[in-house]
Length: 183
Image (tube, rainbow, N blue to C red; front, side, top):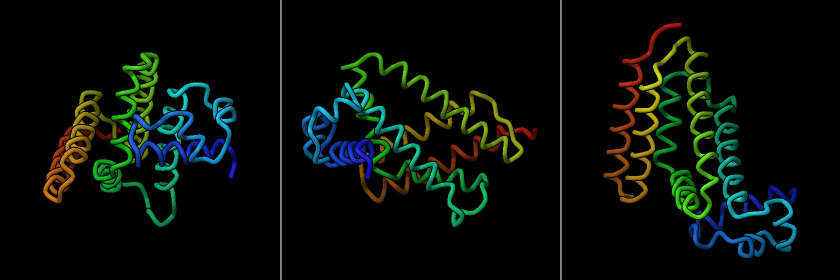
């Protein structure tokens, strides 16, 4: 395993198991089994490390989606991807950690905006592959609804909150479908 990958895995483990407060270069280097100087070489700041962890997580999610056993891309499979996001614990925790980190490092706000733009563009591109276009407002509503459902489910962490999250995602996708227009 490459050093950078080892560091990102360790950082993700620390973040998910111990929380944002534990995500220090010292702790991550310890979990990765490397010297802190080597970690700092790859990720000079805590913010660099955190954004790299989120970027890596997104890449892993995209790679897992592109496996043959997942079948062809459909609106239903997009809904399932969003449902997985909402019901998972790791991605909402990463989002919360980044939100907290923005208080410490305001430069992360620019990264947040760029990531949001890229995510919406990727979603537009996926819909285009399926022969649809969508208004920007519908994407904003979908994204806000998905994030809200994810955070509420993370906070409540019950079977009832998961059930409610599924209902919310279904409603959000129905709203999206109502706003789709053929290319």
